[in-house]
Amino acid sequence: MLIFVQSIAEAISFLIDRSSLVVEGAGAATFAAALSDSVPDGNIVCVLSGGNIDQSKLETIFHGEVPP
Image (cartoon, rainbow, N blue to C red; front, top):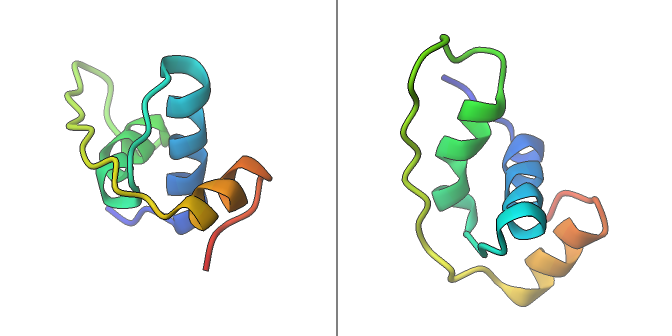
């Protein structure tokens, strides 16, 4: 499965806004995949890990942009 950086950034933002969870990009990738339409219906388990995200990247995501 291919997950784009934009989708991961959106997943990070979603998790912060809705769950108050700060998750780094690799940790949010499974959640980004679950939010996509390419996952079959049924039960899904996402491991959310890593709070070691660079502050500047987090600020970029908050502004609705994709970090470099």
